Length: 230
Ligand SMILES: [Zn+2]
Image 1: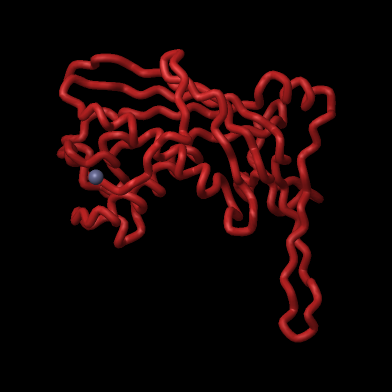
Image 2: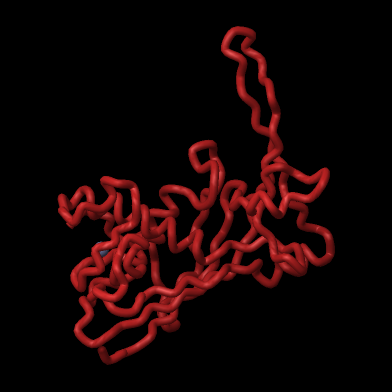
């Protein structure tokens, strides 16, 4: 397979409502929050793992396009990422065949999409270093059904609304690749804007917007991306 080019897409992820991308339970400090967000281990700066963006794009695209499309590869019905490994499967070609695929027989070739970790933009990183960017601690309760009062408050750590992260991804184009594959990347980003990033999306967390998007220095607008099923 001949590599024709690598497209570079950059922009900013702007947090519109508190973002909660949880850290593993083994990172909880004594006396710390029981629902902390993921942070750089040395600087303690929050960041957005590439896997969070990539995984959300993939799951939304698989559910939105490939179930609606009536495709019959047997994925999604079991809740797992597609593992067909076929050359004509956009999910496996763009994101790589899922864990259920036998990689030796996969025909989908190298994973086309690389999503980098997103770090705080320069202005917000400086604010963070000066101690002017505290993380938000939001308390969530359960309402007692008889008494009608809030109980069991649990603190949830979030990146506050208004913060921006630098966003970068690379997309490989091989000879013979369907030219519409890159459109799925934009559709995936637009679907994240309409859905949410990170945890607790149904409770208002993780609304984001992709700002200043460029592909190889050319402006890209997600507002014009069609989400019509094919
Ligand atoms: Zn597949």
